[in-house]
Length: 190
Image (cartoon, rainbow, N blue to C red; front, side):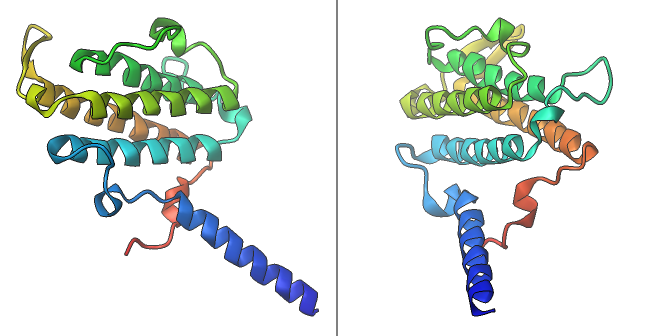
């Protein structure tokens, strides 16, 4: 009986520790390597990365080919679309695409859960590198954009909201297949 109680306490303590360690608090803990507006963008990117990766890990592998209807992306394709955006859109602020990355075929490149998660993580590493590399002096640099003009600051804003839309899409997909976003059971932030 004492052994069972000890084992249950150990499980409770370790699972709580794992859950707490999965949380990301960049507004409290900081965003190493960047300040000012780029720090605010980095904070949002770090939160989105955490939520995308945790959701990707929570969705069963056999659901990666699921889609709510024939005319929309699968679970895997949404994760890979966000990954492609992390590579493509940061080119606009001066960060070249890594060698060997083909964003044109990325969405349909795999449905393997481990490969999708690895691609997602690598794309976020690229995004964070791009934000760190971008000089503050370039934030007001004006670029051509869809027949108009935008600053590099505006490009960063566009990237964050674009990826957030796909995170919302993936949350809806997950809930449709019975998966609750893992962060919804995290303890309250303090």
